[in-house]
Length: 474
View 1 (cartoon, rainbow, N blue to C red):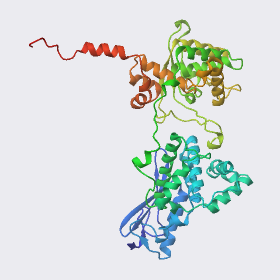
View 2 (cartoon, rainbow, N blue to C red; view 1 turned 45 degrees about the horizontal axis):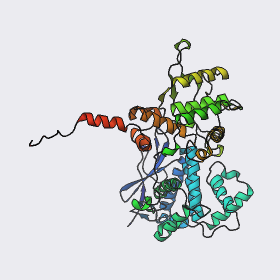
View 3 (tube, helix red, strand yellow; view 1 turned 180 degrees about the vertical axis):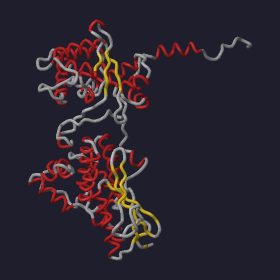
């Protein structure tokens, strides 16, 4: 059915098309600008992330009213809005989505969104760009088209590729054709070499695609979410968070690796303190490199080697300078999976107390200094950490162990320590608090690695008793 449009009453004056107001809501994390209007007695609201977008939408409604255009009662929009998906190319929509969400997303989310949109955009071309190198096309989309801060500075060869993509991009309405959706999704989940992308990659793509489709629905570009739901969407993307037991190191291996790093000619002692902290306190690497000297509480000089305490409150993951607002490679953020401003405290073994005390003295660090620094005094680069760890594994481990999953990633220091705490009988709730995880996540991740407790559990079950023994005739 079709109805006429009337602007919403505002608190600032009488109702008229010219005086219609944009409602502003200032939330804790962002400000939302909402256009409110009425069609056939029903109020409609449309939120926007910027006042410019809200004003543009309100102006469209005002212009439609001025032209005497009919409005659709079911959607509250002018008739001309009903086929937005047919008139808008996927490429134009994807670029607009990036610009709308850019300020709300962190660096890693921006990068992952660009990767997903790149794969989808290539799958939604009328023809494949055979005149361009496939890697160059993906790079142009990922690093320039879907990067709001770099797009305007794209080099000439990139601009040439993007103009071709823009001309050959299919309309958003292709998502309304069920037979085409499956083809697009299969293409998105296929790598350049023709092999299927990893399960984690496919799962991330699916999550981001769903967010993009919800955005299209809110903008009235699509009517419904065309992506598969339920079991149909998860059949080929089963993943697990459980740690591979083979990646854990035994005590001898960990000690040998740390000792080799300590004796490394270039920055060995400095890196040794960092790796020791990762191993003894189960920190994420981005948490360790963000620590300041004042975040470490060491026992007094006369107290001997006792336990120290680490206050973890910030993480600085590496995301790439093209994805951060500051232009720095690292992005400062709150702790993973924790509320804004939340902290956690982790105990440090007496062996770590000795290492950190000596490290602070050798480097002549002050309370406000970074605890682990690069050669020039800045943040310790992840590439340096990864290179040192790989060199240590290659030098210390036998070839067959080096090729195995044992300690393959720096992150395996964390996995090894959390597993050890659980195997040593530390209550899961306490381990979860030290790790910065929830108890369900901790148990789902490390349950397969807990071992050595079966004999004790059997004794406890026997001590609890069972059915009483029956005598003959009893």
